[in-house]
Length: 160
Image (cartoon, rainbow, N blue to C red; front, side, top):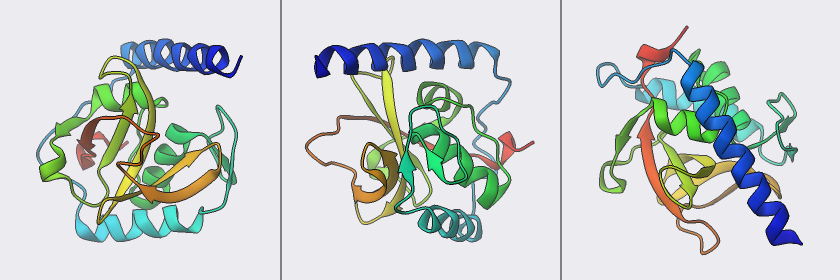
């Protein structure tokens, strides 16, 4: 039963991501990436939410889902608006390889780049902060229960 619920949730996230991507006007631009100063602000917001509860579809300020968390952190920490779902965030941002990942980049998980079901924010040394069923936590990017499928750099050019 849990597998069926998880598959339905993954499908719903994928469909929502595709729909959000189709309607979003955010675009990725390699010029002007979030600076170290921005990361400090973003990280401060993210760290302040450690331990917050997880609720599917929640966008904060005290309860989050994964993409609601990354959206909240970037909005409050750098005044950058990200698309609502993990899939839409992946689709709208400039992709980077794990070899070139920087603090503040987003890490995406799922079955493939077309079925993103989770996102977290990279904080360095192979760790990320993300919102998941255990709430907002700090954990390894390459934990055995996650399948990382991509990494993306948030660009200041998508700010409001």
